[in-house]
Image 1 (tube, one colour):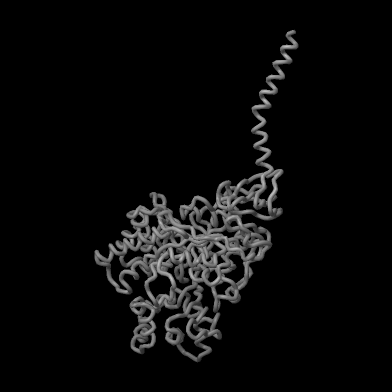
Image 2 (cartoon, rainbow, N blue to C red):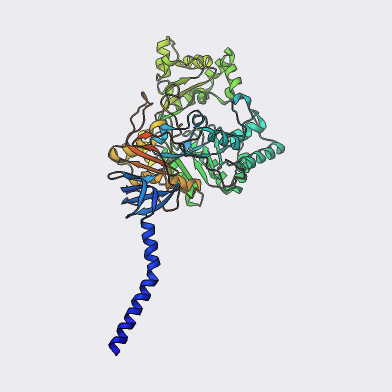
Amino acid sequence: MLKRRFRFLWVVVVLTTFTAIFPLLSSAQQSSSSEYDLIIRGGRIIDGTGNPWFSGDVAIREGLIAEVGVIRDASARRVIDATGLVVAPGFIDLHGHSTNALLTDGNGESKLRQGVTLEVIGEGESVAPANDPAEGRSWETFTDYFSELMQDGISMNLIAYVSYNQIRRAVMGYKEGPATPAELEQMRQVTARSMEQGAWGMASEFPSGGPAHINEVIELAKVVAQYGGNFTSHTGSEGFEQEAELNAAFRIAEEAQIPVHTFHLKVRSQENWGTIRKFIDQIEAARARGLDITANQYPYTAMNHGWAEIFPLWAREGGPEVFAQRLNDPAARERIKSDPDFHTWSEEHGGWDGIVLGYAAHTQRTEYEGMSIREIAQLRGDSDPADTCLDLMAEENGRIRGLFHTMSEEDVRLVMQQPWVAVASDGQAINMENYPGLPHPRYFGSNVRVLGHYVREERVLSLEDAVRKMTSLPAQILGLSDRGQIREGLAADLAIFDPSTVRHTNSFDNPKSYAEGVHYTIVNGVLVIDDSEHTGARPGRPLLGRGNTANGV
């Protein structure tokens, strides 16, 4: 009798337990057999945090990372075998200039083929406020620009800063001197309006010595901070006066209570080589006292911008049209040639042997592309390369872009190893056909040059740390919470590459050449690069700042 009762109780317990766990088993079975949009199987997952890679799978559903780990008994519309490949978060380029390039061609191939899924634009200029007819823009506000961008679509995501310099031009034109109280209030309003239209933060570009009117910058940075934005800046001389320029950035961070990020940290001019440690220590000291200071870097020893940057500030005062007039005025030219700043800044940019012509906008001097000013002078029979520079700039109305070979490889490596320095390109997302002249090779190779040259060949960084500098660190700098790591629930922006073959294929002489080794790039869950080819898909979108109140983008 006792045995029969015991057997009865045992059956009840088993049935009760099975009844309790059956829904859980059913739920687990349902989860494991779910259909996903995409499963990436068997890759080395580098999650972006800096942790060592681990083997596993990544499942994507409706634009989000749905599952990470060993995923069994699940199906998907598409399965990618990532055996031997690294699966990383999509790369975030903290410093780009693709404002117009993405309107011309939303495919953005030079960056997507490197695994870049998000670019940040804005420096000395920004997409808005656009109130100068000479700029040739068909939009006036951030909202207008974002809407125009989405008419044909873009393959990558985009974040836009509003530029302090452009805010000032919108209110004051090219007038020098400090803003009046009324003008400063108007600048505050323009800043607030830009943040409400989706600007992520405020960027700026300053000449040697830093901002001429730092109190204005601080006041506008305070407005940006109220909307949850950050402040980012090109510091100025990047060498001769960089200590003062960094101190100005620290003051902005402290008084405006805002994170500050520095574009392309470096020192230029051979006589400054080896001094970068002083500026690294200066930033470390600011961080030690609680200031949120970070920087980015492109992995090259040459810069790229307009030749106008080597000309004295007074010559450029009044804007591009007035600058062009001065270049064609014999008296003004003689004054420029004898100005100490012209000599200092040309030497700082590499001298006549290091300043190279990349593109002449007016006459398209293709025969000079890739040549230094000294080489052009010899070809033209000019005895003084300074005259060659002035003549060419006068012929081109001041519109020449070029490369400046002026940095030290040892300095580049030291900056790269700092934990608070991210990778960025300072370039545009273009294709090989739609960009005139010789661009900087960083347009096509910044990220893959780090992964191939500096990680695999030179071992300057570990692979995990390099990925961190392209993913979670940029996301942290931006305050971006839904990207930059491989984690369930985050946006499915991914880069899948072969660590043994990933590399840049271009050079300064032949910059237009796509990267190799990135097999797949996924943006918002959609394959944009598939088996190393662009699919034509354009799933990207503008990511709007925290202050955004605009509708419909």
